[in-house]
Image 1 (cartoon, rainbow, N blue to C red):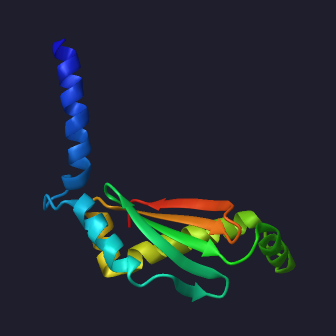
Image 2 (image 1 turned 135 degrees about the vertical axis):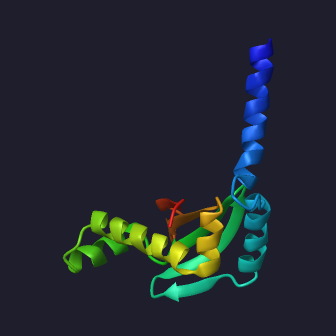
Length: 138
């Protein structure tokens, strides 16, 4: 019984720690929610040809960015093939781009350094999922 209570306490304490487990004890769950509200007011936002920052949400210490690729998968595959590249190389480039985006902005970098997670979810125009990238370190 004592073991069960200890485990239960550690699990519930762990969920609280995810929010404040940083040197400043700053609540990153509240910060993720605040950033969601700030960003949501600016959306949708076309970033470059074929890519739109569609929406944002937060879940605990995660700030989740939803990006829409303004093509269907088959059209993008054709474009990539015509450029002499593979979908794997595109996925790798998008992982780098997402990390750069999350870490090059001072506020976003501070959010991550204090325990926040930036998640980028990429879907195609028809709603089909493409990539789910989490940036936990800069």
